[in-house]
Amino acid sequence: MTNCNVFTGPVYGGVFPLPGSQPTINNFYGKDAPTEQTEGNAKPEDGNDSPTEEPEETAEVRAQRKKVVMKTITDLFDFDEKLLCRDDNGQRITNERLIILFRHCFGFGAHPSKEYLNIIESLWSLLIDKRNKCFKYPNEGYFRQTVLNILGYFCEKNIICGNKLVIARTIYKDADDSLAKNIERSISSNVFPSKTGEVLDLYINKLKKENSKYGR
Image 1 (cartoon, rainbow, N blue to C red):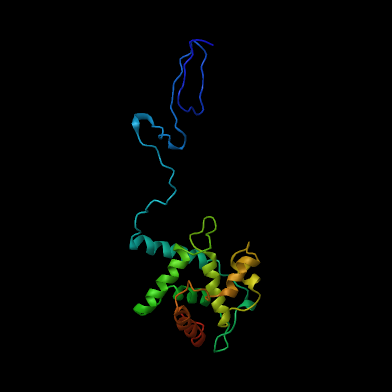
Image 2: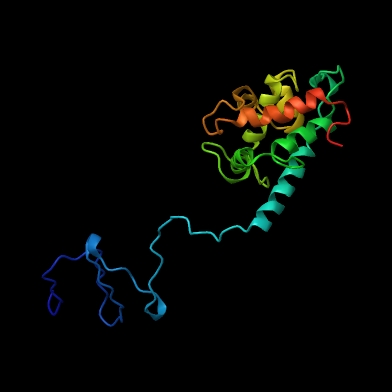
């Protein structure tokens, strides 16, 4: 062939148009190829999937989020009477009293010391902010695992009794054996602050010693 272009350097992905065509040429140089520019010479996204910094949550927004989550969780408490133990006065622990206990353990209606308040805030973080190797179910703003861990501790303290899967399915109808194991784990994981049991015991002992009007 005659009157052909001659390329003396390396060519990657070359396209050779037929005579008479009007090609648009883009040059590429292997791995060192410059990034293609977008319209207006704007720099395109670099594909970095690092999370963007989210605006800091205000105290008012966080407080409201806590209220919504707490109501969402405790609205699920509908345990059969046979799953609830008796207090020190021989009275059956009702779902109402269990709800009040759970709320107290997360600071609602309670007046903890500054030290205990810090621990309670750590529990909130585990409930709504973060939890390693755990995930939030769709449309739930909290970790089920944390809820079941706390209920597991209630089991250890004879507030709730019975089969772990039955307990889990009382509040989460789709719970399986894997999720129910969080009841057995209780608060043994090192993600819980060292004095978590001490804080929970404070309100558990109040429940056991006081009569059925506890918390009213």
